[in-house]
Image (cartoon, rainbow, N blue to C red):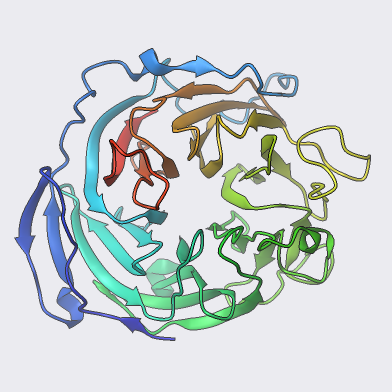
Length: 395
């Protein structure tokens, strides 16, 4: 697979952008400089839009020794304090490099962008030519090698005409090298493609997949669909996997967010008609889809830690900061904050309700701030907010 470089620069970039330069092919890339501009509502506490979900089903808080006890405490009301970038096209994946720069993938265009420096210059480092976007599929997650300073590798989750797959490439400066498939054959469809990838503290790559519109795949341990996978950087099943295959957990409909709290993995998941879910992931555990949606399944299934009505969530990205999980909501058009206490999730609370449209991905920057992407140009956005941007949020 090849990454095309030197393709046309970013399109309409909005009033917040300051054009800088359009460089040629090769190391220069295509650059547009973006101001970090205050959000129109940044001077107002974002807590004014907060609400608690009456349908959130949570476990009992854990005892003393919260997972967030050694981290900064979240403020009473998270605030949007600026805009990192605007004029984006369905941004999906977001990961930070060791130097503090960020990589962003665009689902439908297939572009990989690098956001650099204090003025957040945006450079297109490559375009994935093999991507075949339709519906929810396309160029999805991105992850940075834990050994990036030595190997310069980045990993991408890509929908092709044949499958979903994990590919890797080297990133040198502003140029993405050729793409090497390391895991192929993940089922694909126009919906339920999973797509989130994340390196764990153990150095292995965790991959969320969807059932690709065939629910039975989630209960088939021989299928890669409807699972969370755990693989080596070469694409092999990681040592210690429960079934000797890439499968780490199963019975998932469409996991869209992954986050670690210490060594513990958490996942956000799209429900079908009734309940979206937040799950605490254990090796070999079966999370019940399609036999059960939400709580109340048979003993062999693991109940979620929290559930939401699908109108409140359609949860996507997940991150952990300041003692809380932060979950971006698409249909719900809000940011959820969930305290983590011991091994349990506490009472969820929502913020920014309806202010910025659909929210796709959230990640913790090296300085502790949250970067939150919107998804209003994916065919389902709010008509009054058709722009896609990255918001800067103080937790």
